[in-house]
Amino acid sequence: MKKIKMTNNSITFEEGCNKYLDNCRARNLREGTINHYKQSYTQFYKYFDREKPVEEFSQKEYSEYVRYLRKTIQNDVSINSYLKDFITTFHFLMNEGYVEPFKMQAIKVDKIPVETYTEKELEKLLKKPDMKKCSFAEYQSWVMTNFLFATGVRQRSLNNIKIKDVDLDNSVVNIAVTKNRKPLLISLNTTMKNILIEYLKYRQHTSAEDYLFSNIFGKQLTKSTGYHRLYEYNKARGVETTGIHRYRHTFAKQWILNGGNVVTLQKILGHSSLAITQNYINLLVSDVAKEVEEINLLDKFTKQSIKMK
Image (cartoon, rainbow, N blue to C red; front, side, top):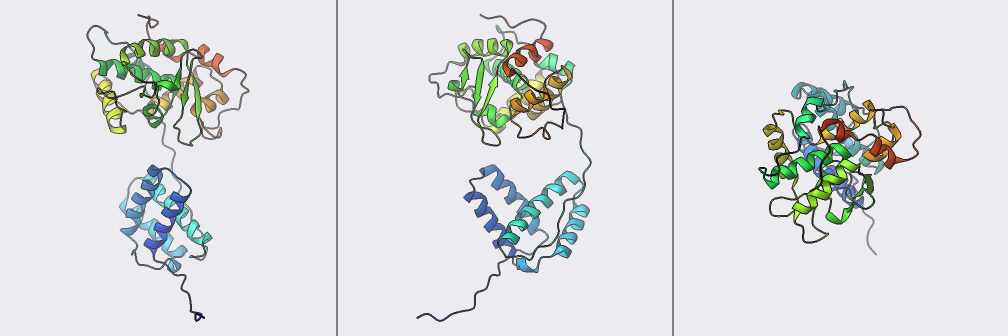
């Protein structure tokens, strides 16, 4: 019979952080989320000793860390990001019994205005290129720009749309990859539908499994390639501001300014609550597809309708 031995529940700070990363993997969180925590932990280790036992942490250590961040980092949003990751990690360690509970809270941050494209910029960006002179890359960038503005999808969702996800008969696109992992069905207005009909003639895809937007070799666009493609496109159009997510903000802003239903907007953007869509008044919605057609944002910024070839 084995002798009963004293057990030690003590772990180091680094071991505690690694345990939380293992917990994230067990919950099947995205690799991007896990990498975000890893980056925060790198910041933690600049101040805290990796070998410091986690049970030695208290509200005093947390408060000192807050003061340290405020002295070394000028951006309050960045400070809050680090603090929220610290709080989340230590709440996990507290629940696991490694640390005695203590109070932690993030700092107050002034809300930063959401950046959007101006109407003049949109007119430049949404103007169809000369089909006799433009390259496929420029043409595809124009189609992507229209799609981003017409649907408000995120870049990751855009890069993962396949040909099979586009249902032109029913004027919808199935967004399989979303931030919250819940599939999203996006309605297409007539203008965007016609753009995609024409685009697919030039796309030269060989399979429904091919990605809707690709690099020049027909392969899936990477995040960096997609960003630089649209960055160069914007500059060529005389638009110095850039940003793919800016189209999502612009879409939401223009939707509301043009009398769009807030609940419909929430569904289109795939938000889990109206609070995320800036707490606009909750209006009843009866027909999402009808509203998408009535509030045809693309037609507002194009001089003429897209003609089929």
